Length: 224
Image 1 (cartoon, rainbow, N blue to C red):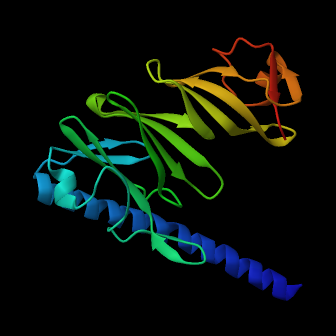
Image 2 (image 1 turned 90 degrees about the horizontal axis):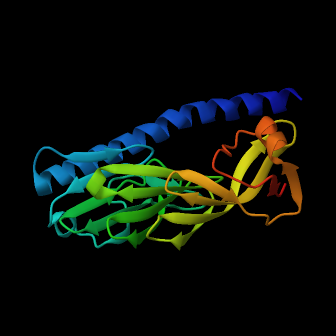
């Protein structure tokens, strides 16, 4: 048993040391990306910052950086390591007169998806160890909108409405659950009756952190 506790203490210590190291690696990678944008486009470097960092440049930035629109392996020193270490995917976007480089350094496995939704709006997904995080990127407005987890499908590009399959949340007394939600920009407007287990709306509000303000259904269905 003593051997087990020594192992556990060493493992926890390694995790404690690893977290700052990972954070430092993504900071260094993003500083290198800023330096590249500065070298290609000059000062100042325009940024859209939130849970993901987006560096905004003028026409010619992507050509100068040697990347095409879409995903590209990071040249900035950040890696995703499982059985093998490999550069994390970042993303490049060309939106009219703006060209953007989207950091994948902050996610465990980088950027996994970039998709043109409609004029001036893009869907970007990043992958962490246990979940995918989705963002709506609107370059002309200089902002991103966090769309939460799940596998997103575009339902209506004009109204920026998405179906998120397999979103994850928690019940206070029963742990994790998954559900299918309809998202319009930054509002959840419906939860589909796709699963057999259901709770009354008011009970779900009491027992979870879901914001059901714009959801009209009286029964909220999910899977555990």
